[in-house]
Amino acid sequence: MRRVYQFLAGSEGATAVEYAVMLALIIAGIITSIGAVGSQAGGMWGGIQTSLNTAGFGS
Image (tube, rainbow, N blue to C red; front, side, top):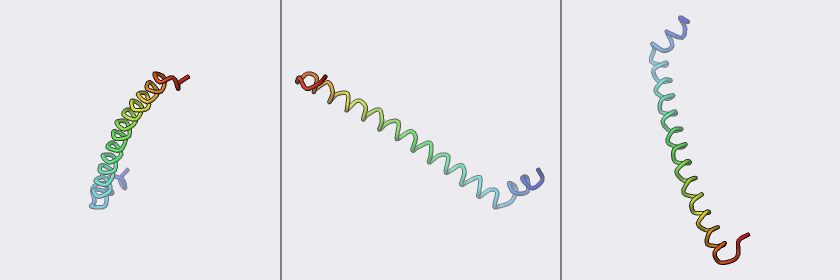
């Protein structure tokens, strides 16, 4: 436990924590972006399917 405290108290520990926070924010942004693009793509493909069904090409 003492080594963990010393690591976090030192400059190396602070740098590691800063990198971990930046990585977490980047991952959160990527997940949010993928979710937004995924829902838009789903709507686009749903519209295409509706158009094909209306034109008589759907199942």
